[in-house]
Length: 158
Figure (tube, rainbow, N blue to C red):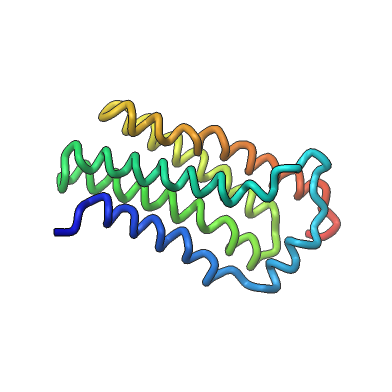
């Protein structure tokens, strides 16, 4: 029998790695040539940070699913988790296709708002599920601000 954590983990993994399929190589080249803020010393850690955030999000979704599996309310929450991950993953391919850091800033801000809504909703069901979403709420403003700052620095390339 397939366990709920296996399905949640597989969906999370497939969506997370799907962005590489949709990310254009010309966008990667464009992004590599952009100037970064002097304080951006942690860029190599960003993939690991997002991996931890996605693991926490999947774990949170698992906790919520196990509270009331299969109910309409739970399915709606799973849809919100899914939407949050899709918006988060869309950041790179959409920004790279459009070669526009302002679009990345908007996507980052949208993810923050969706995560905030999700935290406020699931916290009432299970506080641990809400706690597991806190890494996103702490990291997202840093990533969004970094993109905004890069947009400012590279305004002549937009």
